[in-house]
Length: 461
Image (cartoon, rainbow, N blue to C red; front, side):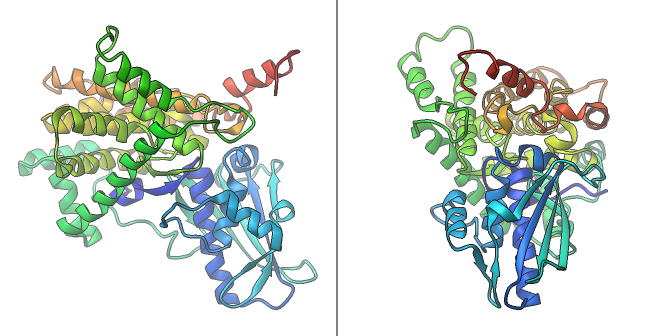
């Protein structure tokens, strides 16, 4: 299996979830293209079935809004970013979607079906689109799988075809062997593979990375300024702005953690809150874990006055690590729990930080291995199906773990008994053994604890 390419791991998205929002959006947009080619007769309508984890937590993850926006022909690459709620409201008012060839009936409140009964699923994040005639007969259907990080499979379209690989090697160990043999670093290795397999020269790669880095830092800045309450039944107050102000006022009084570590944690919360609010983020590797990598890199850039070009190389290293996990295990919380999301993000950030601070390829692998190893078994149990509790604070913890892992790796030769690839294989096995209650279904863990608390007198559900 080939490692997934840089720009399949790092890409623009709107929150709150890459597998439950971005993936279904892209699937809907693909099905819309099929509708335009089919040019259905008057009276036709579309129906969408959400299964598995999409059905159980889809409302909290805005899956119904995402498929509505995709069917409506919405684009994510706009300024300002798309507002999924506003788009869905317009479709509800008119009860139809307009394609280049026809007007097709679609009422999200009736035609998006959350089916929690189906069990024979090819993937926990499965959804099906149907085109019906005026009598309700199925004229065409397509089934998709949202496989993590906004990547989709199924449907049979060009968009769902495998992305250009960043390397022909299935393991980080083999990549490192090649780097040592050629006497090059990981960033140079990735650049060469993007050129060879993706047809992207240095300028093209940097142009894409510049746009992604701008979006990452933009999410931090927006999150540090925003106030109020996050959407959803939890009515969770946004805290990043208050935390940042408190950090600045008390900057000389911190004693427990270095200032840089605290700042990275606040940055991570800022991005995670933007994601929870449905704002623009960059998958790294997912929306739910989007705060970890930008927080670590932004802090390091400010601390050491690093040029953007140095950050671009660090992003390539981060994407390489994330691609190894995506190719050999999973980055979908519905498959392996949050170890695949924040765990992978922490490994990506640790590797990127270690690279930025002058680590060897062996030290970079050691940093990634430590970060992922200590996220093994991490559950994905979002309270009320919202990417808020524990997801927001978990991004901060992932950022701190990444910095600690990079620091420890730089203090050593990089030699370690367990390889990163072995940790990835272990993560996959742990994910397979993990109960479905803890894999983005909101049926166990903290989600269940919250449900029990809500049943107590005086507690607002």
